[in-house]
Image (cartoon, rainbow, N blue to C red):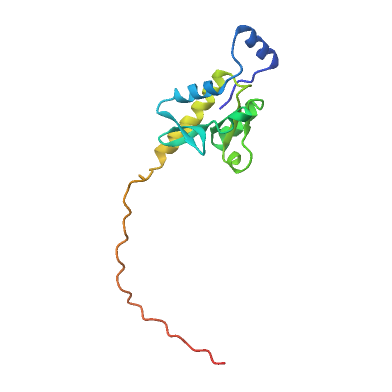
Length: 160
């Protein structure tokens, strides 16, 4: 998975031609919600985007100018290697697991749409592999165990 590099000269040419290099929160939201089955929800007070009830992107770091994508670590490495000025791993364990910041001020609409589609597709594929239990499912009680046929162990007394 390779992203097109944007050189400084190309960036200036694109600005002259009217290509928007700065995405806003509304653009992130619009693109995320344009994906099939995507819906907006909230996690810990921050907007997130889900498919099949599972998160594929968030705006948890919007105040810092980032959108977040839930990628596989290999996908994250490819995005960061191709466009380090646009993508960076989230700090800590989430980042090691593939959570990736997108600098909204530096990303083009095409690159953002491709990155969101990648996160969405990964979530779709993961959802297909795992069967999620319904929260309304009743708990099944295990069958009663038959009485033990083992003889109880002898207790030995210690002498003082």
